[in-house]
Length: 406
Image 1 (cartoon, rainbow, N blue to C red):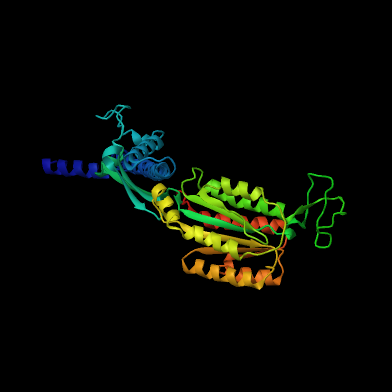
Image 2: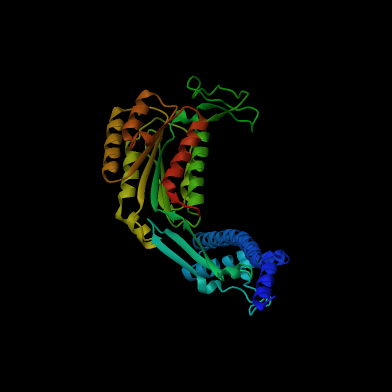
């Protein structure tokens, strides 16, 4: 047999031999399997870390916005707070530790540098009055290194991004001056339909027995219209207390009338003087609203009232008259003068709220004409409605704007 023949025979045997095929296939496929497993692991990790990064950005933006609006922090301080929240949120995540086992970063103290990869941008805008609004934008990124198996495919790392924004605003308080014009005529002593459970019996004055000295106490006792008015005024002022606890933006005054106009409480900061004035009122006499309305209007339009606000809060106040009656003026001339004063007040930019408390038609019509709009007119037929009306007036006029962090 020649050497060529022997060589062909050896090659033929080699080609026919299937031994070792599994080992060869394993050698070829195993790296691919490792790479596929690495990719699966890294994809799971990426999803988890992306969610953690987004949560951290959201927390940072909200924390900064809240600190600006609620804690009085300045922009620089808010940025520090945002970064602190971002890092704290991520501290429980492996994302803050870029650690490669056996690698140069194999140090659990080697935390990811979020200071370099995060931008906190804050925009401040002045609002009407003394308020400010803030918009906080937080953008951050995290560079995740793939495990060694994924790197078999030639990719070593990926960068994930997250962004979040939040808005907030400080409480914006608008300066205001308000004068209450309140009916204290004799009919205000008459009862409402609300029982007074604090006493067993009392003289329940009504239109039929009013002024009768022989009238005796009866049970149950009903709340008088004057008592209801005092409670309603307190409800209005409660809104001012919440809106302006430091008495910096609200000034109030009160004047009462029956058949004559009484000395008013002067316009003063807060509401204490006005509330004391109202609480001392007693029902008596007839009804004549003309002079009282004129006095309230003149006090509000005095230049000294604007100056008082300018010196203390730097604002030009919105001015209000709250006009309340439970009856008709004894003389139509008072209707005429009251309407003329209301028209002048509205022309000068004042807002007139009018409350008819169990009032007859003529009294209602007077109040409707005085009111700045239909939404400024309230018709209360019982104590609950009266208290509600004054509360609504307080809520509207306190003009407190507060936008909570979104």
